[in-house]
Image (cartoon, rainbow, N blue to C red; front, side, top):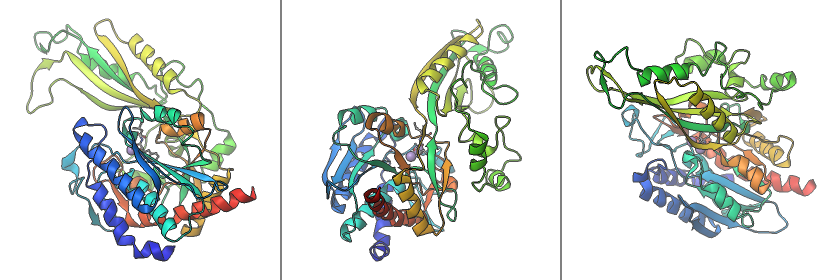
Length: 455
Ligand code: BES
Ligand code: MN
Ligand code: MN
């Protein structure tokens, strides 16, 4: 098996580069044709690798690529999930090389989607090809690769509900997260949920001269800033009434267990050029970005931002705000609480509209399951050390639905690093990580089949 992987390494990498050249940005309608081309690329590669019944399943949005290889009804079935869409590459000028013209530098592939999630998703297709060619496929496998993850997987829920039979399996396998370091593998055991809203603050019915009117009418940008600032208190806790109501508080034992994962605060600050970190009082960095909920402004605009100065009181101001949620907060409830609170703190001098975007529920995955143990064993085989369980701060909205709709737990076998700059300019993925993924995934299948038989 390892011979096959090393003999085909260059081709595996080149195929990934080919896929990375297609700009499958799901957020922007002008890339619609490229999104489709990417789905077809995945379809073709799955077929070539030996999957059966490979199809593009239409949804109200971008198609889901489905394929399967059922070898024996008595073997467990692994349902692989991934996404072929990517984040927008803006701002382009901050890239050292164009985002959709991948280059290899110092052992890393630089391109939008290199890690999130084209690179990691493609590891599964190449691992599958390897198992097919070397006659080592140990489980049945189904692939479900979607094209709307980066815009909230809004149509995937319907797809799952309508295809429950087809998607039946024993476990969900996903590589769309990270690990601590190349010498410290980890398995993600939790993801945060998400509430995402856009707010609009309107003052006067037109932009005004800031001398003639300044001081006498509300400036929507001033007001918006004040309202946003009031959403955190002096301990950096969120002030929305009821926001923390259902938040799961970890026991001292669980927090002590978390603290055992290696983390170097100085290195963390250095990597980000920070003099100090910031966050909720009473929690350390690793807790703040994983087990605690947050509220962040993702973008804010209004008024004049062009060259030079323009003396104006803008008529409107806007912001996009995300809240990361933890068990057992509900995305819908939090969005509702935000809306109510934000509207209630608006002064009478402005009008406020809150528009909810997509959301997703938080999840925690078990570590005592056969699937988790099999994954841990696979990492140990290829990295030489046991992986650490780590809860992540990111979100993959569909994971909670796999549990609620199909009753299936997910195993989050990520091979990316925080330093891979996903969603940022100069996103990259180590060829080391790509190849490690392709080596580790077949061992998961092997251990999972063996350990399922025993249990
Ligand atoms: N793959 C990421 C999520 C992720 C990355 C989880 C690293 C854990 C570690 C995924 O593609 C993503 O970006 N999700 C979005 C949510 C979505 C609704 C836009 C996110 O977390 O912002
Ligand atoms: Mn992703
Ligand atoms: Mn992403």
